[in-house]
Image 1 (cartoon, helix red, strand yellow):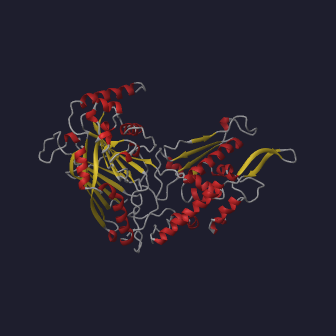
Image 2 (spheres, helix red, strand yellow):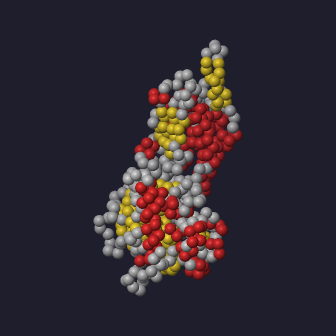
Length: 581
């Protein structure tokens, strides 16, 4: 298919949808009160269950994505409620209305506030080569913000229908309490379970890839079962088996978590209990009956987490970094300590990472400036490749003629550094040497990997003829004894500046000068202070990580030579005789 014909087909499909939509009547959104239940079965002594109500909106994504001009022309398709959308709207400013859905909080974590929900969805599907030219209505089941407060929104479901209103694609967008996002892509008729209960419309079994509960590792499988998935305008009303435009869609989403051996570990069900078209009166009336419902999700999660940890004795797994979102990048970095189930594929996609902190940002800028200079000095090409697809790969090239020893471009050496998290840059800055970084960050914590470790060490080779700098003394002061056994240079390479010069003998060489930076001192101190504070808080509240997986015990893992811990059922109960029982 030519590049010119594809936009034409998409435009024709859009025109066809627009013509068909004119004859459709029905609400552009619904407000649904759900009954959510969680039941944990394994490990058996830690079994636990609870039920609570939630409020979600089922929104027509095309109507929610109308531009201001389209809204003026087709006022009946807007989803803004109240004067200037005071009670509900779709936009970048949740604090300006009673309830709101912010498009930038979904699918693609690019920080661009002007892109609509539909634009984000179409890009997401197109990158995964899922046809969008036959896409009809799309409905999003999600929780809105309330008085400017955006909760964690644990699960949003995208129902994508064809022009004929047949369900084609389902996206399960999962958010965790760390601000990370993951999407499971499910296509009807593709890899569906051969057998399923009679009342289930569609069912898939997919490998688990994303860290949600701190009491589970990432092993196992999800069985996703969906009921009442008819197009909302064709849903069967409660009083009749005949589809009507005035019916009330009540979708049911059931997730069973299985262990790696396919034993049932946990069940979560979100079942719609009541539904009515989204109008100003229905929204205000529902919020009057449930005034705090949109604020309680995080409180409930924290409460039941405390019960599972202190009463049910389940230990906490440290947060792992999301799996790579670009092809087989994880194979270059190496397996993470908290392994997901199987390799990431087309059915799974990490779409949101934790935002970059000021320490990581400063360390990244300092590292990139250093690598840019070293690429010129050594006549090599250096590439940085992140597991986050939104972080563009960076390449540092040797400019022609800047080094007389540089080899021709086709024979130049190349160093590629694959990293899983921005913490890679901070480790490079706070650890005394590249050897420490390889031993600790790469081989033990699995934060990064290189295509050539020897070349990596050469790039970060300590400068000669320098005194031990105050910053280097500070780095060594924070290290445990087993880390001090690794030789440290007098000065960190990023604390020094190499400039062309001449030695007394008249031979060409370089002059090395050390630099002092209060920002570097601040990063080193704050890095270890935060680590110490985390350790102190866990001791104060008598909280427990899975033994050996404490975030502050990285050098202990180096000394013990431990691999990531695994459990047969993916959970660890502290007072049991055997792990995971």
